[in-house]
Image (spheres, each protein chain N blue to C red):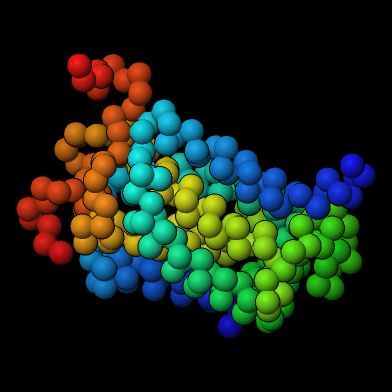
Length: 125
Length: 137
């Protein structure tokens, strides 16, 4: 591969690093996030939509732009690089894995509740 | 609106959703801030690559600091400052607020669906190879 063909994957390379840095939690801390796939999809989908809209506004307003040599060159309608869309999937997934990783380690300990426990009593919805 | 204003507004909206709309109250919980501390460390690392390599470039009209070198009228060359001129780990400090809004909204929704009973189970853990949680027979 020519150097510019490698450089095109700079942004998605960062995304791959984030995935590698968090997916192991599912195996070794048994975070069971993918077992709860519907809840995962329902949590990430609105975030993808909202932050893609923010991104489109920011690009249109000239808040930021991208080095076209360092992104894949695949765009969604409106000029949003697919790299950015994937960012809004990968980062929320990593955040959920991190939260559930902490919960795995602190499992059963008082004071580490997240609010979705089955036996929440004084925690009215 | 500038990126500065939008990023702060995003945080305010997400905290309001957490406390009063979804009532998940994550920002009052130790587990949230522990996870967030881990996340923000890796954000500084990965976002430092995205901004330091100038994969994403910023306009000084939208942020507190100067434009990324070589873009938006900044004719200097090289890396953006590592620290200072409105930047931290090469990234505009606005990115920290953007990241907080992104991560916190995600976790609020995740806990909200759990509270609503959408796949509350199976719970996370225990870790493999944990001495505190020996494997059940």
